[in-house]
Amino acid sequence: MAMILFDEGKKIGEISDWKVTSLAPVYKNVLGKEILSSKGMDECTFTSPKPVTKKSKLTIKDGTKEIALNLKSVKGGTFITATIIAKEK
Image 1 (cartoon, one colour):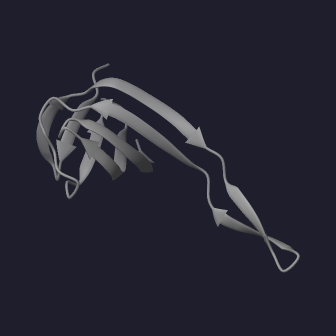
Image 2 (spheres, helix red, strand yellow; image 1 turned 135 degrees about the vertical axis):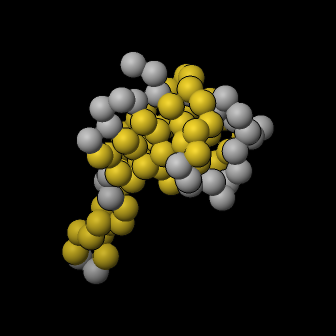
């Protein structure tokens, strides 16, 4: 099924080169105690059909679920690296 990119509810188009990687949680030892420094998250990279800005509020819909993204970097306006913050059916 095609993955469609939306910016604040406005359709941008179908994305390409979708890749997801899971980042493991990072723990630190502080004063003899293990504390969670950063929780594990899924990070994705993809190519947008149209240029977007770092201020864009992007979501992806693929027919059955909606994925909310938090942008980390935008290169050339179309190559995007983002953190997946929510998945809804």
